[in-house]
Length: 449
Image 1 (cartoon, rainbow, N blue to C red):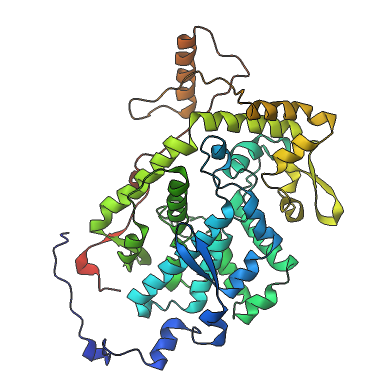
Image 2 (image 1 turned 90 degrees about the vertical axis):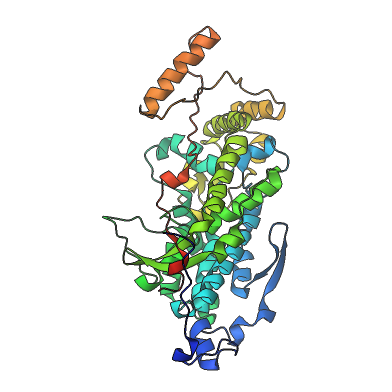
């Protein structure tokens, strides 16, 4: 379909609207819901100065959420975990990322709202999406993805567990509301139990079954809102956009991806009987830049060989410390790390500071962990002995590739690998477009739906 097609002209007079005049009060209420009520006055908003997005206006209810121990905990969890020990600029935390996602989520909603008022995106919808963006990372553990991807699966009581930081975010969100008595504040801004369900579904959208998924927070007419914070359809969402911008800013890595242009070139269109957020066909290069930025960050920073070595050493230290490092949970009971993930009172106390807790401890049982952490401090790291990159499309299983790679490395080193040698497998998709179906629209379709 050519992008040179003519734009379909609208006859505004047929609908009794004059685009040169401001909308009537009735129409304005239809588009923005309760935006004119005193609960949504801009004067009540708080301004955050962000190095990536500039000034961010934060809704008073979101300020209430931010000013809780559960959210403030994110100040003490590095966004990139142990990348900080390789890239000194990577000192940013989950706290500022969450506020950035809040900002982009609101901007995206309002862009779609402005472009197509009859979609019926009300201020209540926008606020719910913003809260989801703000709270989507509440469940992250110490050192971010190292905790849930590397540590938790290796701890004794969780080897078969399906625990994820997304599920923990839902539990922490409930704990945040209950322990800080925020139910009344939610009601003040007309947010019901169904809206809270909607927020939780936005944070961790239910998986599809037989091509369908059951969503209770909103009707199918607004299911496109589920693709803004955590897009399970094609992986294009504001969570990624913020961490691409923020990580590149702090790592000193350049990126030409323009998320603001991407928003402006988005429309809600019905595809396969579902309303979806689609993108202009001419934005394919910008889309490619987005996925290239992701690949570049993985290869140059997230999967950096020294970062991976330090992560393996830390995980080994934490496994040894698991029995002896405890946190007060419900009913004032001590919880090990492996158990604290199921107790939000204890989990709230777990941040990157656990390294210092181990190092300061006089418990002799923690000495093996302390020795490993001292090696990291003194840069006495495990030796990197080599890597193996598949030259062709992988047709074998990961296990077969690992076995072949081990043999090649052993041959290069002149000795067989030992049982306690660590093999780290990193899988980076260069072209995510092959993995996802990305809806796009032609200029001829711009005015439909």
